[in-house]
Figure 1 (cartoon, rainbow, N blue to C red):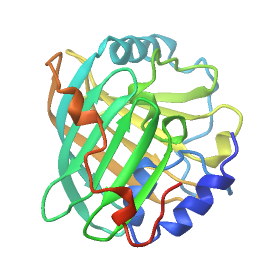
Figure 2: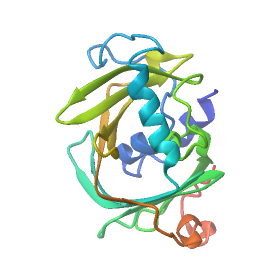
Figure 3: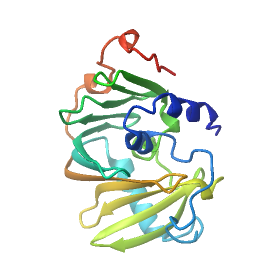
Figure 4: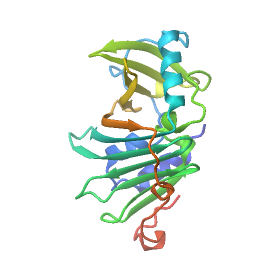
Length: 229
């Protein structure tokens, strides 16, 4: 996977919530993973196979999901909003006012826009950290390697890396047991920055309007800095 085009995309969108970009941009961008930020040495793809299989089965069982989210950013800012998911491939993050930021995946690409800051960007959904949530089917093997599974505070924490470049970033997915329920994830980027997304009021199986997963912002031509990729 070549991250160079997206690296340029990040530079052109530097005015748009840098931590939000960390949360939804390419999970394993180019560059070395910062020492001291690792979550433990890799135990290989066979780490906790039973729990890994359960989480894989659970996520693949989700057709629709809606939840409130709280996002903690590296700069200390905390933002909130509503997450909507329709598998496969569709997702929407709508941030609460006063923010006007929205992130929508329509099954093919992710679009991020903010009318207040005149920022706009698009990139393939396969390049985003949220792929694990909407991929059909999700396989926690092959392109992904599960380094380890921990139990903490009543949650299963699944640490994953890109199989071919395990040193270049991590995502830790948190799932409650009994009953199994997605509770959030943490993204550690190549510079050691950390973005936490925690979910509450998680509901699944409800009908969601198709319009939720379509770009409904201003005409892209109205964005002053023309950051469309």
